[in-house]
Structure formats: C-alpha cells, structure tokens
Length: 136
Image (cartoon, rainbow, N blue to C red; front, side, top):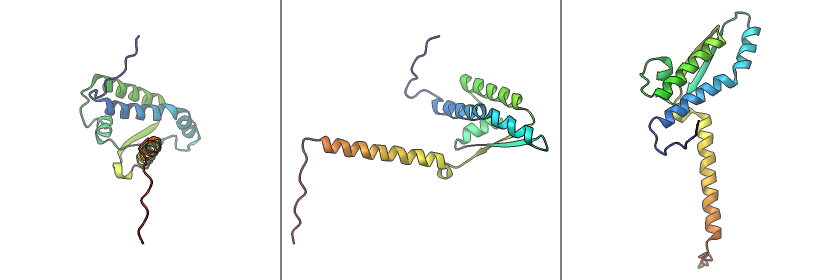
C-alpha cells in the first residue's frame, strides 16, 4: 500500500479529520471507560462527546447523510468501537466554536507563533531603520 500526500483542498478533508478526532478520542480512552464501567454501581455509563463541527455531530447522530465513502467507513468503525464498549450511552453534542476552549487555545498559539515569525523576519531584514528622535 502506498501513502500519497493529500491534496491541499481535498473535498471533505476537514470533516474527515473531525470524524477521526472523535474515533481516536474514544479509542484512546477505551481502557478508562471500561475501568469506570466496572467500578460503576449501575453498570451503565453516559459519555458525552463534544465537537464544534455541527455537520460531524449530525452525521454521528444519524440525522445528516454522509456522502463521502471514507467518512462512512470511519463512522462504521466508530459504531463497532461503541458496540465493543457496551453498556454505555454515547451523546454527541455540538459546541459553538466561540465556546470551544481547546480550539481557542490552538488559535492563540498559532497567532503567537505567527507574530514571533514576523518579528524574527523583521530583525533579519537588512533594511532596518533607527527610530526617529522625538521632537520636544
């Protein structure tokens, strides 16, 4: 199997990443979910998965159609993973982007990195000018 780089503006690329993020969040925490389920007295657990992508949430809930074959496969694998967990209720919830703390932190970090890159580029510039003296 050969791995090819994805096209820059590939159709459904961002939505695929959102679906994969949900899958990996569940898969990476499956041991903790099972441990919590074993310790629970009611033997029933409710898990809330939040996403700032409304289309991803609607597709996972089964409200919206999934047109992309790769995303259908991802949702199928998520369903198999949920069946493997068992005795749990999974709630997919939409979170507005303005209230998504993780997304805001990533944007803030990217903004700081851009500002730092601009600052470093200006320091390397051969056409630096000294500040003008203030007139009193």
